[in-house]
Length: 280
View 1 (spheres, rainbow, N blue to C red):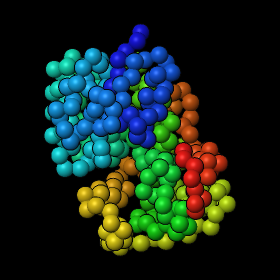
View 2: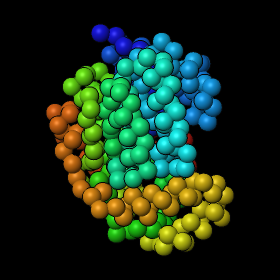
View 3: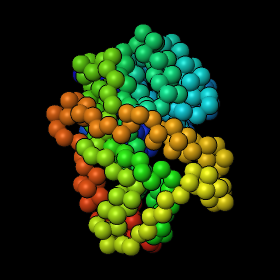
């Protein structure tokens, strides 16, 4: 059966992969972004009605993160519009171990609509498509929480789970916690990337205050510094976030992609070279 599915953040790390997979399955996909037509903008609720028109399912990703001030109110308002627009199902990408994100989850779980909550650990792709990339290219990565062990999850696996949730009612009312198959510290991550990419990349543990100051000196907006600080202090420090789950295997019937596989696939693109022009 063909569904009409709005993919919010349809050009982002997970959204573009979800959209591609749905289109390959013959689903009617509408990309939800500020540059799409019709446009979707979380900061402009007047765009939501048109973006939802004619849709019956939605993949919900919130930018920049469900933890930021105002996210809960935005999600509640969006759910209200989704109800009015006769949306049948919502699949929310949430953050594993984020208390603020769980308040957003409740807004969807209490909506009366079919739903699936997908809580993801930190992405592998943060090292190739996000704020860790430039330091890797520069050959010197300095980060706080050096001792934290993270079960990084691949966006390919997240996308496969999301598509399964959108396509099958068997995932209704489920909360999935997605992780990769192993725990890694930042130094272990950097060492593996350096080895496979044929680079010398130093890793230096620093304090959270030093990291925040460094970001400020680099011109990073204060709201992003707040978010990054929150993710490091609250999420990495939350008990249970360093636990590997088997939810990907339960949903997909296969093991999640390992970090080593991600590194091997990504290194050949050249993205981690100092003057890389390739993209992943």
